[in-house]
Image 1: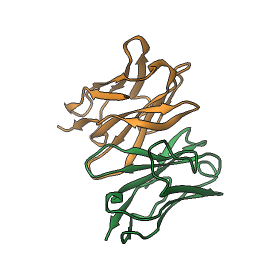
Image 2: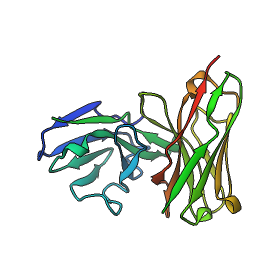
Image 3: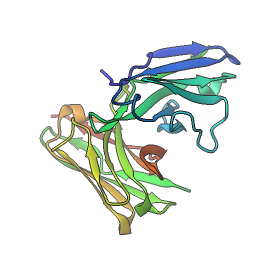
Length: 110
Length: 120
């Protein structure tokens, strides 16, 4: 049981906009920034969004993040086949004094 | 180019010990926090431990506290994870990850992982 809650799956067709939610509590998302990681099949995770809505260099602006109170969202616009991957949210938890991850969302491009 | 190369994984019996290493290159190692994150086969990511770059402050997940020890050798640009009293549930692919300046636990580069299997 993950501390942060994500839907196990999401899907969309090429060109569509898809959002993935991440729900937490006052001790994690409510108090700290949220990061998102993308894990393509068979590879190591990669940082996609940090500090709620910041994109590392090289990440397309099709990817965007937002946070509201104790929830966060990752939006992917102009969906492409290469976006098919697992997506994980993460945040620092002040009560656990550590990082907590969401269980991950498997995105399928139909 | 940032490179992180993990080693030291393998098959160990419950109660045994392993020491993982992560050789870093392409950045000023001593300036950055470093973390270990694990992933059991077919499962999600689980944060294990973090060590800061500035003063080597350490943090551990409750699941490994008291059994695992994270450390770093800055002159050797190497991160370690000493794993004692191993349990079956510690079996996973262990990733070494580099933090970003100002946010130690935000990991902008990851290694390819080293596989730890705990089984009798």
